Image (tube, rainbow, N blue to C red):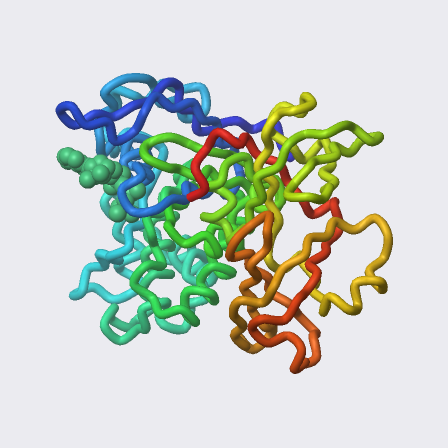
Length: 372
Ligand code: ATP
């Protein structure tokens, strides 16, 4: 890490209203220099508006935007040390790849562009394609030209607005890794807007999950996945089961909860709800963390595991695992992705089963919220 802060993005109380509609509620956010940051959320949550306010393409209704130490709130886009890559590559069709990338340099009156453009094309691995026209390249290659063109003037921050949205799934996955590599090599701040949770988690160091104009949670992909603080975040990044439970007591670092007729353990550090006795907690557990055995084999489950009983309601084979839906007294429609299970005739609909998991894989949420 360096002490360079010139590529920090700092939003203070930034907001956007359109008439009586609030697209972005007052938002405070700091993106450190050199990080890969993703704004993640469903369509209409305000992520593009936030990005456009950083770019200067949208005027905030309130708040300030700092890039490094500079307050850029009143500056037009071209005076900000940022550039944007859009989903539509917007390449010049009549210019070849070299000239598309050289454009920004030539516009600034720079005559000797060969080395800089060559280096930039090498960075995006298109050195061999320099004399082709955009239509002769694949979608992924065209998007890499757009990235090269946006980087040629050395912005401090690169903004990416759903840049991979037009690509098919396989190409999108390749480009995710490619963009991550490019960001690591150039070392500048990338702020990336996407509605695709896998994309955000693959590429970003830090993800801000947005919902209805607010940042619902901010964190590393692992932290958001393992410690979601709301049902929205838990279900936007993957899926989760939820059990309504009540705090019974404490046992060391664990909270003991009552659910149905049984008890569940939850590490205190993984609970974002108050843990006073009698308090309500929504217990979350990811389907892939759960093991499932026929009821008659319950005696073989090791001590210390959380366990609940249920009955298979449905099952479907999905390749790497079998997905079971289990009805349980503590949670209807409990989802389990069971891996490495022999296709056992006892696990057909109606079979009595016991679900069990390591308490460390349990998280606790404020029970006053809706289960999204
Ligand atoms: P998408 O992925 O669909 O672009 P988004 O999360 O990027 O969604 P925004 O484009 O930021 O969402 O829009 C946020 C909200 O603001 C939406 O409800 C949108 O309809 C509204 N909005 C955006 N621009 C305007 C505008 N110029 N006038 C009125 N409402 C707008």
